[in-house]
Image (cartoon, rainbow, N blue to C red):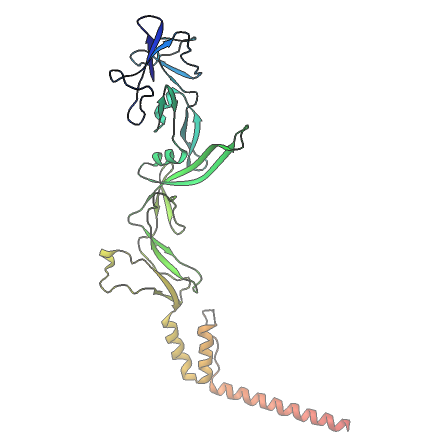
Length: 331
């Protein structure tokens, strides 16, 4: 801001630049009695060409209006180029919307990076930064981003992002990523908060619990199940759980695993088919490796196999006799 007034000679202005510091130094050095001053500005020089102006009295109290013509002894700020990020609720998508808008003095506090250099106010907030600020201690989950182009320039000028804010459960954090194809690997993973540069997501096997509008808690399972996509299969961990591992004190053992045929099925198959001899073993192999239904395939006994072979031999002899008879007739 500038605080301007007439000099004692009544022939020029003297203006003091307010708000300068080490990061925004005084543009007119050296300082005069620790003040940043612009002295002897001609009376005919226009004090300001700002359209959207906020004016204050000498006690920095904002005035309802500004003088219609060039003014003196007035402190002012200009908002012609002031653009800030506005956060609104999007009830249709249960998201927040972060969008840049033209602002005035009343929007000055809505900006986290507001600066008014030489009276010209600006805001350097980005949509993502403002969205993160809105989430506070929660993690930003950006859902989509839209942009539009200026009518006069072939460049993106207006961005809008929709986002939600996530927290991550400290108790229900077992991600049971079970592959329904038993030939592919499965895994029990630990739910972890994203890194600073990552977009927050809630994994597919987990669910989100609504806390308040736009704020969700990501919750998975409390324990690793090590399930397989088929009840006939058992999980085989990629690495054996340590003998001293205590689930009650150490928590879940997060590890990948594969699925193999249930040993109980193999034992049952062995007890049924091996006593039946070679044919039984062959049937057992078929059942264990190829048969997909839950029913046991019918198995022929040695007596039934012998009877079948006898019937087949008799049929062959009858075919031979019939052929010889037909040959005799032809002769």
